Structure formats: structure tokens, C-alpha cells
Length: 240
Ligand code: NDP
Figure 1 (cartoon, protein in one colour):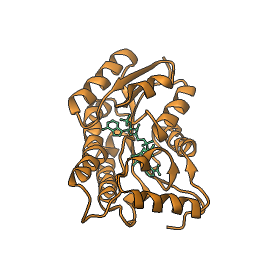
Figure 2 (cartoon, rainbow, N blue to C red):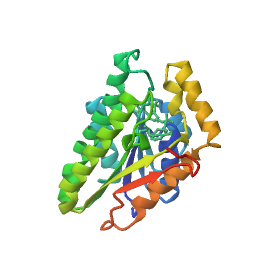
Figure 3 (cartoon, rainbow, N blue to C red):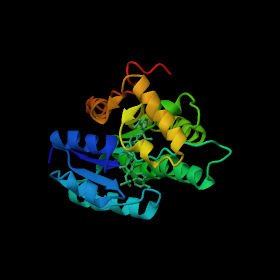
Figure 4 (cartoon, rainbow, N blue to C red):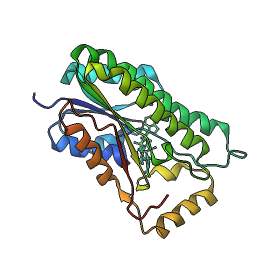
């Protein structure tokens, strides 16, 4: 088998599903992870293992990766894409939403890296792609906890990149601006949600999941000794 195993978390919708489609078209065997199994199966991709995993459960995350590795060989690339955005006013927001965001957006991403890094170090090859956000580089109203979680992704990714660079392992951070996915759907506050939708319309629309996926695949396809450290990709008309 020439193309190597790629693990994509959050592959049941949005960026993850598009990344899976594009990598599959290039011949990669895949492990697709999310909680909605039927959405993973509906992608109907060849050489693909779909696993219902909540990435905040380290044990099932690791078990899925080891199972896929038994079938397809070592993980060449882990794409930590699973994420939640629950916008809210810090004074009113249910703290369980902060916990969920830090658990999925930050801790699960660290668990994912720990699961695959040892083997990558031995092989002196591998790629980790962490999906952050423009909200991981600058702040936006009602984004306190989300933005905090994504700033953490930047700090963690850059530190780990520095640490594993001598082992020829790439750590790439991708920071999209506003894009059309299911992400906003989970925000509970109807007013905040509406403001966001109005803003999207005001700037004349947002970018597609497919365009973001293309940038991820582009960075991965470059030779192993070339590391695109960060990609910031946003709608041209998005000013902030
Ligand atoms: P979607 O909501 O469409 O996708 C999020 C994915 O994450 C889904 O597949 C969801 O699957 C998965 N997910 C969420 N929680 C868990 C969990 N506990 N365990 C496993 N999987 C989980 O949104 P996007 O495609 O937009 O989001 C992908 C990434 O991009 C996120 O990290 C997001 O923060 C980031 N991003 C998005 C932007 C945008 O404008 N869309 C802008 C900047 C960054 P399921 O529900 O089936 O578990």
C-alpha cells in the first residue's frame, strides 16, 4: 500500500468530512472519528474505518487508532479537527459549556498527539495537523471560552512543534476564519447566534469547508522536510 494512514477527528461534518473526501480521493486509508457513526458511514469511502468515539474519552480514542493501525500500518498523519464552539456571555454562560470546549478543543487534541507521537519519533516521520481558528489568534465578542481554548491550541501546537522538529515530525496549525459548517448550530443563545448569522450576511458570505480542506491537504502533501507552520484562511471580505 503506497498511501499512508491518516486519522481525522470530527469527520462527520464540516471540515473533517471534506478533508476525508479529499484525502480518500488521493488514495489514503483513513480512520474517521466522531460521535455520529451514521454520518461517517454515509461518506462511503474506500479503505476507511469509521469509529464512534467521543474524543474526550482517551481510552476509546486510542483503541480506535490502534485498530486502524493493525489494518493499515502506522499513523502517518493525525488531523485534530473535532471541535465545538459554544458562544456565550461569560456572566451568563453555563460553565459546563466551558468544560466541554476545553475538553474537546484542547485536552482531546493533546491526547491525540500523545497517542501517535512516540511511534512517529521512532520512525522519524509523521504529521500532526491541529485545527485552531482565527479566534485562536485574536479575540471576538462572546467568544471568551472558545477563543481561550483556541489560543491554547496555538500555544500547545507551537511548543510541540519545537519539541518534535528534531525528529522530522511536522506540527501544523490551521486557523480558519468564518466558514460554512454546522459549528454555530450548537450555540444555545439565540441572540448571539442571530448576530453571528447577520454578520456572515453583512460580509457577503463565508468560505466553504471544501476550501479549508484544500489548504489542509496542500500542507500535508508537501514533502516531509517542509513544514507549513501555520495557515490562516478566511473570507476575503472578512475584515476582523
Ligand atoms: P462542525 O460542527 O461541522 O464539525 C465539528 C466536528 O467535530 C463534527 O464532526 C463533530 O462530530 C466533531 N465533534 C464534536 N465534539 C466531538 C467529540 N466530543 N468527540 C468526537 N467528535 C466531536 O464544525 P467545523 O467543521 O466548522 O469544525 C471543525 C473544526 O474547525 C473545529 O475545531 C472548529 O473549532 C474549527 N473552526 C471552524 C470554523 C468555522 O467557521 N466553521 C472557523 C474556525 C475554526 P459529532 O458531533 O458527530 O461527534
